[in-house]
Image 1: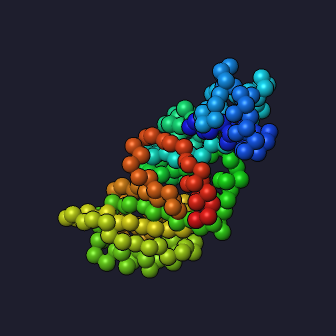
Image 2: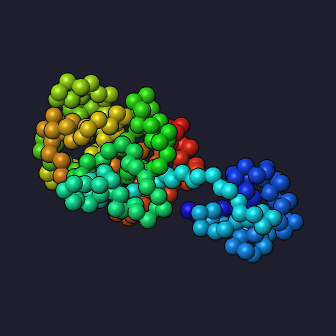
Image 3: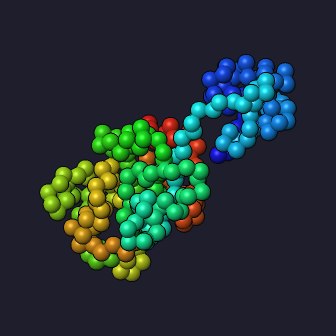
Length: 237
């Protein structure tokens, strides 16, 4: 976890207010790894030994929230009986066991959220939340009029009702087009099923955004922790 100001860590442990923690630091009552700390010092609560008056600080359990740039060919599970690579293997260095929030099929790429906070995951996954998800989809096939055909869909091929998607053209070159498809439900393979109904063949599908959180320049196969601001914004989206 990133280093934080000591007064914030002490306050989060429930010992005192942040202002009181600052007074403890000024008085030399706080140490980090056996060395006296000063106001303005930072520490990593998961790695450093923080003590107040010589007694180790009892820290609350830290929850983990992270985003992964999932590559194609990786399954969104913690283990796979067929021995295929999993997202759990890609985030094994995050310091704990985290679980995927939602799904991203094996042939798809892009932004995937993972956490060990069950309440957070349930809120994001609940049907009432309906957070926007944006995909960049490379397609071939019946390209003329495909944007209108996709936006006109109100049900999948099995009759399942869907909220109409928002579609725009990102680029086009010859017989290939990249579409931005924004949906709210995230049903199983929804975008691929919609494209098939519109006469399109999907060559590549990348999730680039969930709510206000964008994939940005996070390298393929890498992950990072969410900031507290990003986590709160996701819950508000």
